[in-house]
Length: 259
Image 1 (tube, one colour):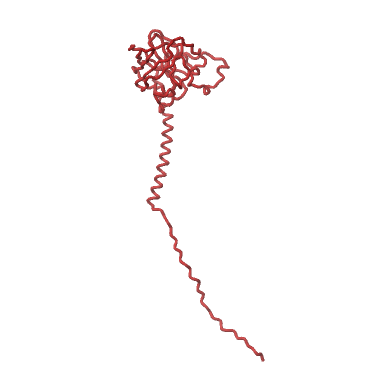
Image 2 (cartoon, one colour; image 1 turned 180 degrees about the horizontal axis):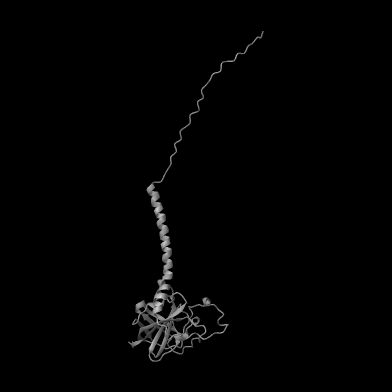
């Protein structure tokens, strides 16, 4: 007979209770709808503003070219100035037109006879064009650099005398016109109308000229230098349309009276 007996205790069924979980409070921070709408509208406004600004800048460049070429250009006379530049040698024509520096008068007509040396004791005078707000701009006779002054082409007539004084001036896009800057001074001469006044002060004498015609010629047309001795004339010459080197515009004026 066994000395010890092991009796199993009855099985107790214990109900399982999961541990209590802490409640987490999640806070969602949301922006007010009004703020979101305002920000969206701001981005839309900036986008539209940049698009409009881009078109505005583009139109500032392109519109004047179309205006001068297709609105003013067809109304300009093309008579008289029809002689082309003489044929040049292969060596002379080997450079590209884009390589030319049009702030130098000698590059405007590379195959023409160079400006003759000036024998006059007067080397400069002034010009005023009230309609363009140009006042006492310097014109240098026989000079070269259009960045520094207007240029009276050497060998052409003198103010107040029989003949044609041919004056060259630089131009850029009209929107950047500045009557005090020689790189922009002739940008708006295509707007000059007949009877517009041009005043030259040469050798202490003031001469009054009036515009009577304007023409557009080819870039290689040297006939703008031709002389006519039935009266005293001035021709203002610049690139056309302004800001390009496509053609040349010539404003023609004749003397009214010396003051």
